[in-house]
Image 1 (spheres, one colour):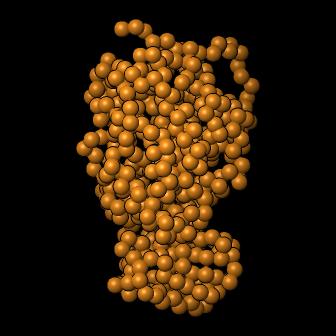
Image 2 (cartoon, helix red, strand yellow):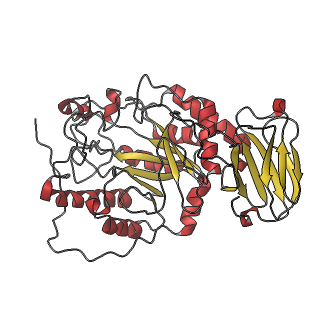
Amino acid sequence: MKRRTFCTFPLVLTLPAQEGPDPGAPRAAVERWKDHRFGMFIHWGPVSIVGTEIGWSRGGERRGRTETKTGNVPVEVYDNLYRMFDPVKFDPDEWVQLAKDSGMKYLVFTTKHHDGFCNFNSTLTDYKITSPRCAYGKDIVRMLSDACRRGGLDWGVYYSQPDWHHPDYRNGAAHAKYIEYLHGQVRELLTGYGPTKMWFFDGLGGKAADWDAPRLLKMMRELEPELIINNRAGLPADNDTPEQRIGMFQNNRPWETCATVGQQWAYNPNDKLRSTEECLRGLVCCAIGDGNLLFNVGPRPDGLIEPTHAARLREMGEFLKKYGESIYATRGGPFVAPDEKKRPAHAEGFALAEGAWWGGSTHKGNAIYLHILRWPAESIELPAIPLKIVRHSLLSGTGQAEVKQTATGIRVSVPAAQRGAVDTIVKLELDGDAGSLSPR
């Protein structure tokens, strides 16, 4: 088999100057990203041919990991799948339209996963989609990033620092050359495919020193000053990233849950989907917790997104067409339901809390939106606020909500037959700015 080549920048022998602390993205950029609340995540590559998990199903050594477990696809098979990868039905505009139909405002795509295969035309390796040995040969990242801009979606990059295919990765002193390779590819993606609004690192718990992250983030901030960077490069950066679970209420630091609409990140022909109810409640729980949801699909090897997955996402879009005012451009709170951490033991999926937990709230302007996801009692008791409720309405469900405000609290009730099937949304309009109220 012909040996693949990896180009690297010359290794600097002198120690780099000490970098200052990462300043983070401008607040306006972070707030704009939070306004979106819902984005599409896509894991795709040659592994879709065999329908196993991206990266993790690759056999062979996993340098940097303590476990000895490896994937079930022999490395010599996995690493050559790209020679057969020919997604002739891939239409980036269709993917973008699906995201928009689903109510999503941004898209994040796997430019390189742990398996090292590059879905873009990197000049630093020939293990890539544009290699002459790849059946497809077209720059998927170019096509998709351009389609996002045409369609009005913000473009985001997923990039894995771990690379189990690269010979220098965590290979003793050679890792220094890999760091330059990594930095070079990040530069390529930011200078050749922008503007890029979000960056999703996936360092598998690696430390900042493993990637020379202070220097790396400094370069990224210079190239794309409004870029939102997650916390998986060993530095806090801009946002936290709970995975396959809903984060708790947290309004002092941005966060984004990344999760799959099915059970696998990459394409699985036998994937089991989350129910529509679970998907919607996951989205709502992110919003009331002041977080975003980055929801993943894995396209088929021919480039199409499985119709069942697409239909599930469009169902979410229908919900957002009706009730999006209570999700988009809102912030979590001020009402935080008790027993938020009382989740069922050994629960799977987006399990709701138990006890006195009823859901939560979002707010924007003079409005508070109560998202009542369960009714532990016939009415919801809320703490007092220093603003007056001047009007209230039932957005989801039928009939009217009953809202009683006193000096000691607020009581909200909706007859059982008139509640929303998934989320009973009650809008409270105040005589002042809801954002002035602290969480309670």
